[in-house]
Length: 303
Image (tube, rainbow, N blue to C red):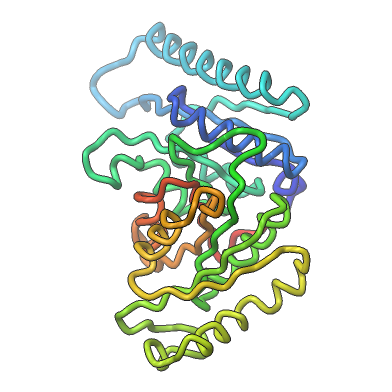
C-alpha cells in the first residue's frame, strides 16, 4: 500500500452544485483527519474511429478549457474556505466512473455527490455515485445535496448497520474510527428482517426467535473487539425489525434534531458482476433515499 492512501481523500467534481457540496464535505473530512484533498474532474472524449464524425480540434480544446475552468473554480472555493488544507487537482479525459474507481485504489476515502436528473430515484442519485460505491477500492461517501458541510458539522451521532457479515464488520470498524475522529457517539443498529436472514454469524436459525436481551447480546458480541480498540467512543445498541434499509432510514429520521445521525455507515453486501448487484440492495436503497451522507465500506477496503 502506498503512502498516498494514508495521506489523501479523493472527491469527484463536475462543476455542478451537487459536486461542490461533496467537495466541501470532503474538505472538512480531510482537514479533520489531517489529510490532503485530491479533486478529480473527468470527462469523456471521443475516441479515434469511434464514429464517422470527426470532432474538430477547436471543439475539443474548448471542452477542455471549460472543464479546466470548472475544476479551477471548485478548487478555489475549497482553498478559500480551508487555506491550510493541501488541495490537489487532476483533470482527466476518461469516463468519470473509471477515473474515480482507479483513483480510489490509492486514497483513504472516495467522496462523490449526487448528480442524476431522471425521474427514478436511482437515476436521481446518478450513475457515477452508484457505480463508484459498488466498485471503489476504498470506502465511499455519497453526499446528498443538502448535507451540512459546515466546519463544525452536525452534532448528531454516527449510525452503523450491523448484521454479522464480513461486509458489516468492515463497516463497523470504519464507523468506530469515524466516531473517534469526529468525537461523537456511535449508534450500532442491528435490523432483524421479517424474512429468513441467511448467513448471519452464529444466529441464522434464531432470527425472529430471540428475545430483546438475546438480540442485544448478539449485537454486543459483534462490537466487543472494536469497543476495546476505541474505549473512548460512546456506543448505543439498537435492535430494530423490518427491512434493513427502510428501518435504518426511518430510525435516522425519527430522532430529534440533536440526536439525528450525521451519517450512516454500511457494508456493500453485493455478490454479482453488475454494479447494482455488487452494491447490494440495502446500501443502494440507503444511497437512494437517505438525506444524510452514506458511507459504503467493502470488506477489502482498507481504512
